[in-house]
Amino acid sequence: MGCAGVAVALCLCACASAPPGLTTAPPPDRAAVLFLATVDRIEYSPLTDSDLNWTIYMNVDRVISGPSPGETFSFRVRNPTREGIEVGRKFRIRAVPFGAGYRLDRYERVKTAPRGAVKSRNDSGTPK
Image (cartoon, one colour):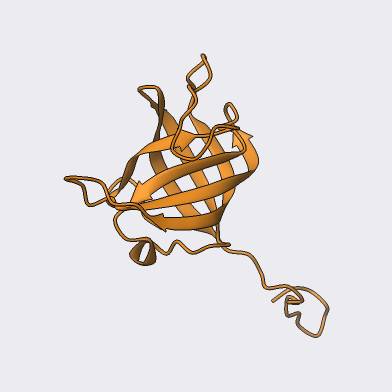
C-alpha cells in the first residue's frame, strides 16, 4: 500500500491521552518510529483549501522500533477507499519527526489469515 508518492496526510498526530485533534509533542530523542496499528474509525472532516478531508484514527497495537507514539494516533488522507483503509484493518506504520509531531513516511496493510483458516499441507504433512 502506498506512502510517500500517495497523497497521504503529511502529519501524524500522536494522541496518548489527549482528545482527538490535539497532539502531544514527540519524545525528545526525535527518532523515527515503526509500529503496528488497527483502524478504529474514519471521519469526514473537511479542511479549508485542502483535499485531505478524511481523518483516520488508529489504535497502536505494538511498537516495533523507536519511541512509542502513544496509545492512539491519527492522520489525514484524500480518499480512504482508494487508499484501502477500512475500520478494523491493520497497518504497519513508519513515521518520522516533523515539527511538533510526526510526518507519515509510509504505511502498508498487514494481511492476516481469517479466523479458523488452516494452512493447506501436502500429503507429507509439510506446508505447500
